[in-house]
Amino acid sequence: MPFGFGSDDPRDPDRRNKPEDSGRSPDPANPFTAFGSGGFDVGALGQMLTQLGQMISQGAAHGGGGPVNYDLARQMAVQKLSTTGLPSDQQATAVTDAVHLAELWLDPATALPTGVHSTAAWAPRDWVEATLPTWQRLCDPVARRMASSWIDALPDEVRQAAGPIVAMIEQMGGMAFGSQLGTALAQLGGEVLTSTEIGLPLGPLGVAALLPAAIDQFASGLERKSSEVIVFLAAREAAHHRLFGHVPWLRQRLLGSVEQFAHGIRVDTDALSELARQVDPTDPQSMHQLLSSGLLEQQHSPEQKAALSRLETLLALIEGWVDVVVAEALGERLPGAEALRETLRRRRASGGPAEQTFATLVGLELRPRKLRAAADLWRRLTEAHDVERRDALWNHPDLLPTADDLDSPGAFVDRMARHAADLDDPIAALERTSADAPHESQPPDDPGASGEGPASSSSS
Image (cartoon, rainbow, N blue to C red; front, top):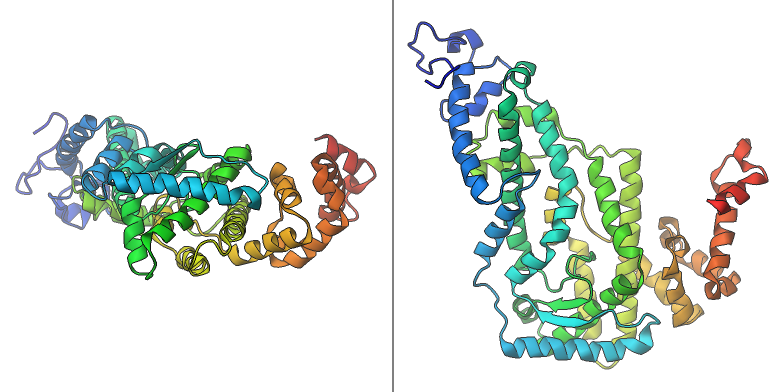
């Protein structure tokens, strides 16, 4: 037996923590039964260390370490997609031509200049490679929360007496999360149509990328020509890049909202303790249960609710703006554009693989719930003003419509009509907004609601 551990043989008279003493029989094939609430079986710990050693040696080969083993995730996803959807030279040329045509049509429909400096026809594995750095930023917070909760779920005697095992468990959690991420990215990479389809700037800035294989499959069920679908999707991709490329605060605000939400995630430690007795740490499929069995509590803190509201509103505003701008740009130029527009709306609203991936790995559904309301608001603004004044709202996040404005788009448009001059002078609009905000948010008897409130708010 390894030094420091008792015999695993139930016939050994010197064995501590016998099955009859603990009230249950430990499963030799599953060393995590040692963590059960009925008592800690030190004898099973030796076998657990052996199995963990084998798994960790495999993880080391994949660059293990940290809350998520991203090398393992990349290798798993790329391996599954290695020969899937490789674009031909003809498809790559079609993508380039479609983006260039879409850019010409977009120019009169928006005041924002082109944000594309190169085009690309990606295979699914290319999408994985290009978007993994952003996924790393999004997944790290919840993975760290999962790892710390896993350690907290161990009995006190285990944490105190088995210090080296903590590092092993952390590495095991990194491999489990990496395996789960790799599986999810492989599925998502085989279905996503463009680099910005889910509303986040996942890929490199300024690279308009389409996935021809997924587009062909998507178009086959629409009774539309692939060339029409490619131009339509190219216009949406180019419109997204105009926003992400020329609204400097937008990318950070989007990703920051996801990070703020993930930092507040809580793990159901009771469910984690129960699962720890059921999973085999050497079996990746078994370990996936830890990430897909309802461990993330749905009780959101006030900070999380605020971050989620900001994220949903911003996603709706982005998708609504793109929807309106692309519809204006394509107009009568592209047959079937309106049908494609409605199809994509339903695709987003129904929740595809992106929603499933985020719900599992980040703990939220990435869905613009008020897409139609946002599109209606941007359309009304375009009709009431002009393209330049409408797009001037992107100059600062405080100028954009709020969640309440999406519920009453007509009221926002009327308010903008009364302050139309502010759209030509964003600084004046910000000063007016900051001056009005304290009176709207503070109760009447709040000392901060005095005449000094607006000045202090404006200076901040």
